[in-house]
Length: 285
Image 1: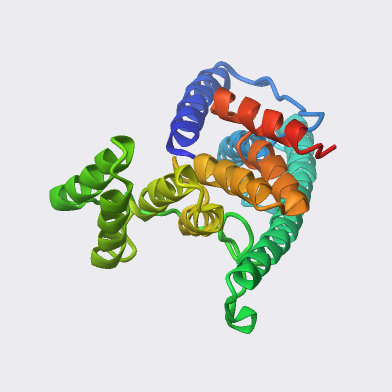
Image 2: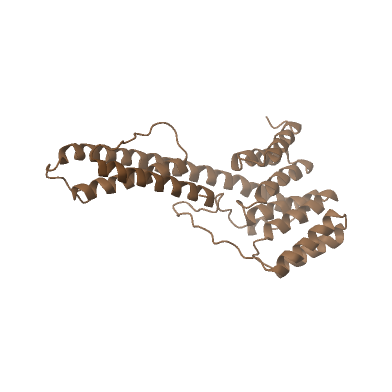
């Protein structure tokens, strides 16, 4: 979940909690919503948080621990009916969340298998050792059964940013040989850099402009695999698809171009339109 989503959810939960406190102080019953319809995982997580908060307030009011039954005093009968309904709704939404997470893992693993096939095909075209290709992790980097980890904010040194900017400037000004040399030097000098994906993108751009589509495809694939959710991921994925198309690998190109919209449905809009147009030109269907 992105920082903006977390902030929004936090504000919404805070507002709900404040409203609930006022309602409880005024006496029963506060309004309980029953959620229906299809939901995203973020939406379900928010709804689960709301129900958790209300359940905690009801239990605290009744002096009832989770799983404990009320003695029916002090209006406990009505409250317990409400408590039971909330717990049933919590169970239902938890089941929905688990189903969504299962589907997300399945889709990610399926897409990873397909990108593994692209890696194999590129290595084969390059004359490399296909037996040495490492396993491709599911898209998003989440192994089956593993919980997603929140990545720390990457830190970039001034010299790191400056070295990459000089290389990008060379490519933009048509100094391709010099730019590519600088980009390779950057990748060697800063292994694992947060800017690695961006460096591979510009290396691929330079190679693509020069007509070295096989090298470009490799650079875009490497850039995408370095960071599949960063700001350069949509560009790397799109240009990988275009490069594969230029190499005559139509089925791999179509697969990759379709993944652009699947993985980045929120945009950028011009990139999504370009991916759709490229798909049409390749008769992807």
